[in-house]
Length: 472
Image (tube, rainbow, N blue to C red; front, side, top):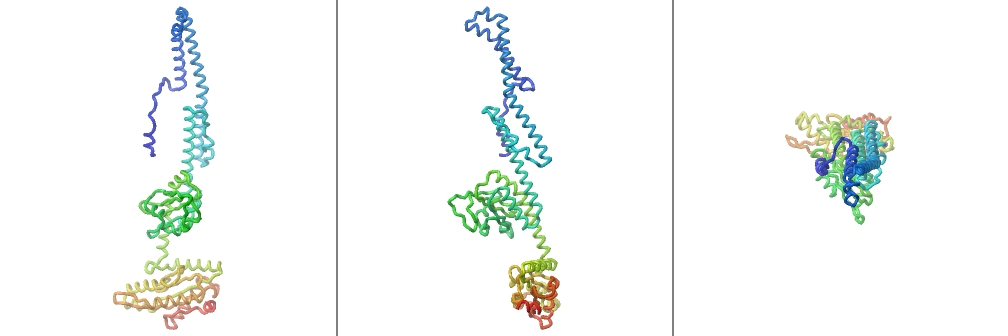
């Protein structure tokens, strides 16, 4: 219910019998006046019940009746002031305390002194005063929930805004969602090339989630959706690794673009407060995820050679250093292949640079078609390439190098003048086995072997001698 509808639902204000600006002064006047009226009417009532009129209507009897009526009114006022006024004063004092606590909490960020438990009133009656106390307590609970929602949203926003790398962001996103809702497990799905793929998971096997009906719902709706899972319903192991009672999908939209979704699975049912939190998390998650995806795209654009779609030299050398460092830590092999296109200058001079560009793309594509998943293809110069081969010993480097040489040699490149075929010369080296084995030494050794292939007639692979011995 929005604010307008809530206001429309309020009952109309009651008419007040107001004489002054103070309620208890009005009460005293009304009670005193009522006592005087009773004092005036009482003698006539006494006559009706048999009291002699001479006595009942005497000035003395009138005075006594009026005085008694005034006394009764004063006593009633005193009792009302004591019984009702004390409760109203307690309510007023609590409200002033809450107001001051709110001001202090807004300055310090410490909301412990302004909890509903610390400030609530005791409901000791079933009348209007009890309703006021209960309404006050309800207001405090709503205020506390609102503050909790704002604090949790601020914490999530801060945690996600500090991360720009996609891997760190999705991990932090799942941490925040699980910690604030108490869900048992979950996963984060990220939209890439129009499909939702699993980027992070916790206690949930999400390999089959991307094609599930739940994700399809997320793609069609912007709302947080929940599925109550019956206790006798078995959940496929491809979806979750435990029996949940509730599965919740939170789609992450930015404008008209679906960036991803968060799936939470809970062994118990999430409360209404958890759903309000999840709805408040959608906007900051969308902004952070969009920033991370944009950053990733820019990084890829900065790292990729636009002509061949291979990594450029700067990024590639950094990747070589990372792989060499990993090989040292894990005591595993690392292979390097260096190759270039034979007589590439002749292709440019004969057929033009446009044909040369097509040859470069074709060679890179042929090499990419035979190297392994996880191998890194780098364009280091005009027609020069480098392949980093994690875990490849000498014999592996030789096998992959021969596969590259044959793939390129059997490719025909279609150009304006017809078709042209080219060959490549390759040099290979494997870590460990040479010198201090820095990235520069590995590249230099691979280049030496490449130059040896050129010297021996081109279209061949030569392994660096030390690497060949190491590979056995």
